[in-house]
Image (cartoon, rainbow, N blue to C red):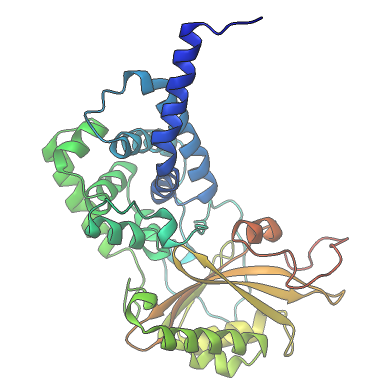
Length: 358
């Protein structure tokens, strides 16, 4: 008969307690790491590293701060260390320069570590019911693509300070203690970060307001239904009507970005593999708390398979689409699965040859 030592029992109890108090914050920590890095994959790895560090140090945790605050401190420093040896993750519009001519050849750059979309709804990453309502709103808005892309223009310490102060709403002294600087330095970093974020985005009709919170549900549903219908009918004229005059379309890893409804229409006419109604099927999902769609393209064998993931931003003033980021990758099926999308929009045989599009 084997017996368990008191030390082992105590360790097991501590491990169980750690899981109980820390696990409710896992989605928040992943979202925090995503804000810091712009990569969903890196965020999951860094969140795992955060929880490992927290588990190792839990016996010394004195509970003077909340578990949420403690985990965010560990996550922030874990991300800051990782960012010292990594490049920023832009969107094409963040590389500098003017919008591209939609009739020019498309160029890909796989050397750039592009910004990645975040798989999750706003509610999944929002804090619990006990959190300050202003913090809840800020946390939800702060995973939107526009904000994440703007953060990529900031040096890592400015990025951390802006997130901790403006998203998590920490006091300057708390931030200073977390990243090891003075309160005066925190205030200086925050001022520079705010100024940089204001100038980081290309000019659009209106910025940073989610149509889901400003348009009534019926108007939102109507707009998105028309958007899907236009693509599935391959009616480019109808697509153009749904974009604002200064709408932006970009599609990493392609380096170009395009502005204006007519230019977006020209880009689609010149480069989209679709030729007729039925060549494209779109299924809804959510990315960065925004409306998103998996677009399936009909391949030469007649089967629709993953082609691109579109993340939409809607201008609430015009009730039109103001920004689309259409993400491509070498493994779209895996990317679609991460967003809860199937490998095909209907039962179909598995692919037996490489995708003709990626």
